[in-house]
Image 1 (cartoon, one colour):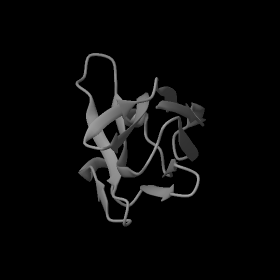
Image 2 (cartoon, one colour):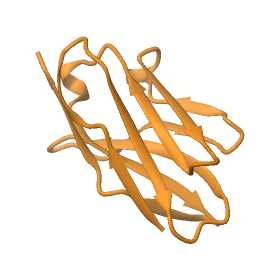
Image 3 (cartoon, rainbow, N blue to C red):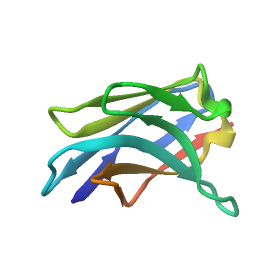
Image 4 (cartoon, helix red, strand yellow):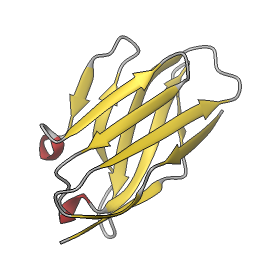
Length: 114
């Protein structure tokens, strides 16, 4: 299974970005999909997750600003990030769970300038 993330970049505070992560390979059924992030010197943290049925969960720090969604037909998960803040600067990694095994993408860098 391979995960290809895209959509990161440099944005000013208050701006928006949309991340995408497409899974490919031997995929029967993806359970949960999610986005994590890791800033320099910090631990990796969960940003948002979504089940196959569409139930979502968000970190308190992004509630009301970020929206996670998925397209099961395309094996793709999205993260719409609005009202970005400098503290959102991090490498964002996508994660999928298939048959109780976690797979990780390489990450995409999001830099928010103040």
